[in-house]
Amino acid sequence: MPETSAQRALAVSLGARDDADLAHLFARRHVSPSSPWRDMFDAAEALLDPLSIARELPSLSRDEALVLLDAVEGTPASGAARDALVGHALVGDDGVPFASVSTAVSEALPDGVPSASPPRGATGEAPAESASEAAEAAFTNAAGVADILMLTLESPLGRIGSGSLGATERRRLVDAGAVTTAAEADLLVGLAADVGLLGANDRAWLVSPSGREWLRLPTLERWARTALALRDALPRAYRSADGGWIPGEQWASATPFDPEGPERAALWVRRFVRWGLLDGAGRVVPWAAPLAAGGDLDTSALRDLLPPEVDRVYLQNDLTAIAPGPLAPHLDVRLRTMAARESRAQASSYRFSAGTIGAAITAGETAESLRAFLTEISLTGLPQPLAYVIERTSAEHGRVRVGVDAETQLTRVTTDDETLRRSMEVDQSLRSVALARDDDDLVSHVSADVVFWALTDAHYPAVAVDAEGRPRALERAKLSGAEQPAPDPVETYGPLLERLRSGAGDSDAAWLERELDQAVRARAVVDVTVRLPDGSARVFRLEATGLGGGRLRGRDRAADVERTLPLSHIDAVAPVD
Image 1 (spheres, helix red, strand yellow):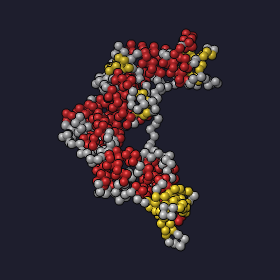
Image 2: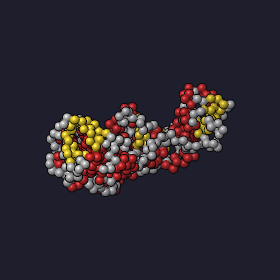
Image 3: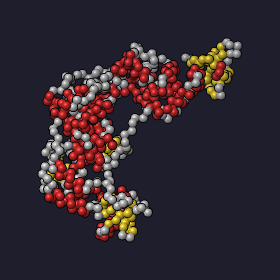
């Protein structure tokens, strides 16, 4: 099909689609909502541009690629694959590829679609031994992701220009014991981001609101939510018709037009193995089989293989706590707000100090709430040394109060300790908040929250207070923005769709003007059929030189004169070979 005819055919097809279908097509083809297209012919021309087609081909599944290649070789597409390719604007309604598509396909796969990845003999359900290893991987990596989120709550994970973790952040995760290698850090952070546990700004990864909620869930529920999210996040080409996924060994050959397909497939296989959905040989484990078939999870088999969680710890005189097994996540999360975890294994250890207790009080705990929580989870009562640290830290904490002056709205720092007041006034580490003496207090134009955290970082026993002087808890962790629902493509492309519809008008006249415009741009020689006043028609062979004011100008090759023809009288135009 000649390119101009293909553009017209696609424009007619686009005009017949409803807004929802068009909007989803534009979203798939990454069309800018601010595109300057005036009508469907502009849209068709852009969608048939070789660069646009080259960007679209890698998204095709293997079945779609095979049907498209057959169509290029002369067998029009049919059935569900034809409908999908029409939806991608790669073939016409008759199943025949557009010329630029055929060219792009031939250039991308000159030798045809490569053979599918050969079976490795790892089919069927995973045996008991590998299922046990997959369960261990599920438990270990769920704990690893939890550690990553906890560390990100303390301090966002910095990203480099490419969007990946920086080397410093990888080392931080390794040194903290959240992961064992830098590669594992990239893998688990990417997994957490793709399932919505981490969100990003321009420079850092932040825990999302759903990630914060996820931290408080039991291990099995953490795993199940993430498993469902992983399946839903799979690339379309890896999904099966029933809503599950095709065998993992087929993922590498699932997108024949995508040169990065094998690398992307390997990443997803590693994620599924890490999360205990596939075993090391790529077989589906028993508890993931319903999920792979498009159904819900059956976690009973996994539950039996996971180590039982405990809800008690041993509090010891050396200011440590020992969990005799995996501590229930909600207890682990709270315990880590008041103690530093020293080791993570089947039995984890935590260490208390004046600093960790002070941080807990800063976050809203009190001496009473600390004693109550620790007594509740302790198998050995509350040791005297730990009780003493709690009491002493609580007594010291709050000697510096940070609030907002009701009259001036300045931040006011008060204390009864003159030594502390003088120290804060001259402390060089507090220069950024510019504390100034105001009688017996210090004031700052910087917000109270910023001043409070500056004092806390400088190890002053500060407490934030409200207008009535009552302590108020501040949470330092910065979360990413709340997850927004996917934008409605019809709403996103609404103005563009309206412009394309209004620009349709008389499609034959619009197409004729478009052909003439292209002829003028190319200074092409064309045969123009003109309807004369007596109803007869005459053909002029012109070198098109101008178009405007409703008229075509061109040099008549036969008479060697300049002619001006009204567009309203032109019935047809045809290129001269």
